[in-house]
Image (cartoon, rainbow, N blue to C red; front, side, top):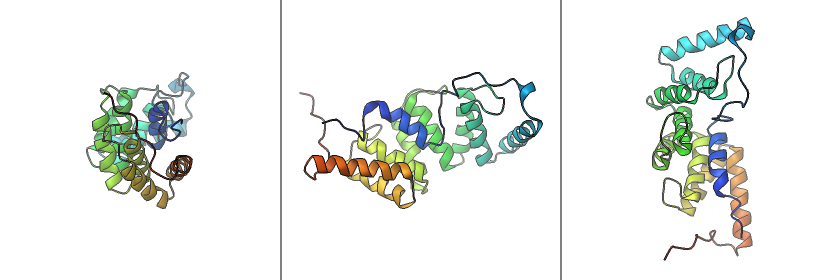
Length: 195
């Protein structure tokens, strides 16, 4: 039976969506040159940069997303995005921790692919009650990425996130429920062990 909830191609895609970053690979098209940016957008970006430079973790995270997505006339730059996520993450800001975890999960933005570090960062954000991190951590436990696979922990984190109205968690819990029903009510079957 196909494992809908935790198929391998969905790991990076879901993690990126959960982290609040539509894509770590930018928009797929070149950003508009700065001359084409509306003055109010340029001013907002300048103010955001000032706040980020002054150490505001929310501004640092938002600026990281601007670089990740290539918004506001800024050329997409995953390394720059990751640097801003790290600054905010180092201050314990859950959205930044979750975004930085995605970089480690996918090996993008100038960091090595390190699922254990991705899980550690995700756990730090989840422990602070950040619903997207809770969902991402449930997903990581369900797949066994960066942590030992543990269906009960996966379900626990997904339920916590769903209780905070995280739609991704609700959807994943429903998929888990359907898988269990198809398999006779038990936990999804573990993959066979290698001899």
